[in-house]
Structures are given as structure tokens and as C-alpha cells.
Image 1 (cartoon, rainbow, N blue to C red):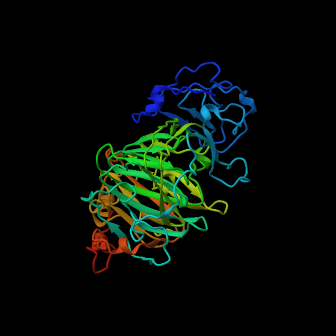
Image 2: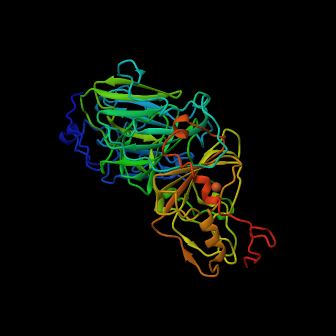
Image 3: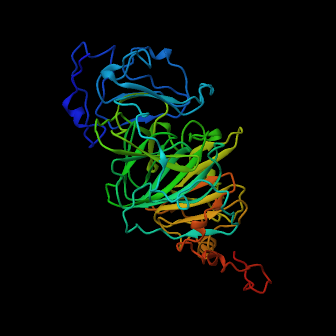
Amino acid sequence: MDIQWPESSQKGSKVSAAVIRPQPLKPEQASGNPNEATGISFQHHHNSASIVPFRNSAAPSSSLIPVSGNEFQSEALQGALPVGQNNPQVCPYNLYAEQLSGTSFTMPRRQNMRSWLYRIRPSVTSSPFVPSTQIDPERFGTHFEQDEVDCNQLRWRPMPIPEQTTNFVTGLQTICGAGSPERKEGYAIHMYSANTSMSDSSFSNADGDMLIVPENGSLRVTTEFGIMEVPPGEVCVVQCGIRFSVALPDSVARGYVLEVFGSHFTLPDLGPVGANGLAAARDFQTPVAWYEDRQVDFVVMHKLGGRVFESVQPFSPFNVAAWHGNYAPYKYDLAKFCPVNTVSFDHADPSIFTVLTCPSPWPGGVTADFVVFPPRWTVAEHSFRPPYFHRNVMSEFMGLIRGTYEAKQDGFLPGGASLHVCMTPHGPDTATFESGTTKDSHKPERLPADTLAFMFEVNYIPRVKKSALESKYLDRSYQQCWAGLKSHFPGSKESNGKLMH
Ligand SMILES: [Fe+2]
């Protein structure tokens, strides 16, 4: 079959997923009933049992079967997606069919995840992988056997943007983690700080999904499935195995990464909250297909079992002209989160702010939750409104995207982080406690709209990387923020003898 490539596709514009529009094909070139590619940048990701039928699908929607994530199909080139089967003897445009599975083949249907990619050359075409010389495993690594637990309250000041050339991957620094990527249980928490776009290189993680939370600078994340622009205030998830490359439209970037081994993020159940509220499935967006046909020495970096390898292939891996399936990256704008909270008294547990959860291998448990503390009204009457003092069985890593967190009036800065592990006490600092016990609690108060904090709440007790504990950005005076919490008990030596109320 003699195929004429549309001129715009041969150039493989990098501008946007929407730039490559369907080109008219000769009737004999189009196979079946091709879907029409659209000008929109994203498809909405419905991570629920409800199904949106394939757009323009030749099959009646009633023939679709329920799955936990929606089935998508997208083509950057009209007719590139085979119709009626996954693996034709010869694919349209002579593309290679390649499956990417996100779960075991025999996973129950509701959790089963896979996608089919139709690409110019298959992923297998590369030189042998060798250990990467670009990555220092002491800085970015997910083996924690040699690291220590630390039951102190820990806090880090923001890492500066590096002066030497550093991209998203070389700028990753592991803070803590637990479990094992080989056993596919556990997680790792990283921070990144970068000043250079990845050029002719990609990264993929065979150890797990990566939830990326930008704090400073947008990320332009090119994946095998399409392109996502992710500014601060939005987050994205790139799942296990997917090749991606990160460019920095703002020239600098800093943020956080939660990596989960052997499981996938999903929306939390809502229980008595009902069918609506918190993160809505319709607000998650998945990129549409985008490809480039570029012959270049391309460095493919790949993490497996905590080690980073690299290989060179003579073409860009972002060569997928069409794909379909339910295993695809997505992004989410945290401004769309609909908080649910008390309208009477007391302070609810932070679980009410869960955006995404990563279930543990046993029923009802979690490996990790991603929780956001968005701008909102606080109205609890005759209540201490800031977060209460607590010791939790889960471990908490917090970051600040912008503003001032309600429980810490200073010292917890955007780009910084704190870690309070299992049963380590923590809570509001002295100034916040004093303010929270003296404010008029009958007046509604608007938590600043310019503040956005988040938490990675994790189950396994984390070990903290030696490099993070020895970092000059570790705030060694953190515990002092509680030193002023004196006894107010009547009659005690510290007390002034007056009841607080
Ligand atoms: Fe906490």
C-alpha cells in the first residue's frame, strides 16, 4: 500500500496536541470507519464505572462493557486507528501495533487497564540499556534499605533552582520512601528542581506511577499518548511504563513527585458524601494523540527496580499516531476540587480533602493518598479552627504550592516540605494556637485564596534518604515552632492563672 503522509504530520509539529488535524485521505487509504480527530487538547477522564461510549464508534454503546476507567480512543492522523480489532495483519499507514498493560492480564474487568498504541517504529528498537551515568542513585533512588527512620518532626526549606544545567530527571531528589519496587509495594517521595528542558530524551518508570505536583514553573509533559501542559495549581499522573519528556516553558521548574509501586491512583469512594463533591471524574483530562516522525539519536531513560538505565534509539519515541484503551496519563486542575467540610462545629479529618487514592494490596487500605487543602470558608462555631494537634498512624509529607499554610504562620514555605511520620506528634505552631484560641469563632473566615497546600499521606513507615537528612536545607530549628506552647492549666507554674475562656 502506497501511503502519502500528510505534510503537517511529517513535520510533527510540537506546538500542541490540537495542531495536527486530520488530513483528508483517499478512500482506499482509510480503513473501516475512522474516528474524526478533533481540535481539542484533552479528553475528559472518567475514573468511574460509568461509561462514555467511544466517540463516533461504529459499535452501539450498549455493546460496551463497564470498566473502572473510561475507554478512550484518539488519533492524530485520520484512519490511523484500526477498526474492529487491535492487531490487524497490517495496520493503517503500516504502523506497528503495541500493547501497554497497566495491570495483570487476569485482573478483574473493573480494574483491568491496558492501551493499544499504533506507532511508526516499535519501542523495542533501541540499543541495549546500560546503567545511566546521568543519575546519582544517592540523590534519586528508590532503594531504602540503607536509609534510616527518623521519628523527629522534619522540615525542609525550598531547594534553590540549580545553577548548573539540570533537567526534570536529573533534578529529582528522593526525600523518603518505603517498600520495594521489586515487590511492587510501597512508595517514594521526591522533589525536583530544574532549569533546562529535556532535549531528545525521555524517561519512563517501570516501578510505578508518578504523580507530579508543580510548585514553580509550568511543565510541558510530552508523552506517548499526547501532550499535557501542567502549570502550578494543576497536577498530572504519568503511569508505570509510559515514556515522557518534560520541557520547561518558564525556564525553571520546582515541585514534588509521589511515586507508588505496583498500584494505580484512583478516585476515593465518597460514602455518605454521596455522588458528588471532592474531585469530579469529569474534570480529569487525558491528552489526545500527538506524534512526531523525527530521526534523531534519542536517549531513552528507564527506571526498573530502583535503578535508572538508558539506551539510544534512532528516532523519537513520541511516534504514536493513534491509541485506544483505558491506561493513559491525565492531569487535574486543583481549583476544580469541591471541598466538603463542617458547617457547624469542630474540625474534620483531612481525609475529606482526598483528591486521589492509591489502594493497598489488601481491601480497604491505602498505600498513599493525595490530599489538597484548597481555598475555602471556615465557619466552625465555638471551635478551634486550625488543624488540631494529632498523632496519626499514617505518615504525612506536606508541601506548599503557594501562600501560607493555616497551621504554620512561618517557616513552611512554598517549595519547602515537612514530614511527620507514624505517631510523631505535630500540629499548629505557637502563634497559630494563640490566634486560634482567641479569634472570634462566630465569624466566617475565608482562608486565603492564594494559598494551596497538599499532603502525601502514606501507609508504610518511610525511611528518609541520608542525602535529605544531611541536606543543608533541612530546618534544624523546626521543633522550636512548638516551644512556646506553655501550660495554661490553672495553677501550673507556667500558667498566668487565667482560664483561656
Ligand atoms: Fe498532620
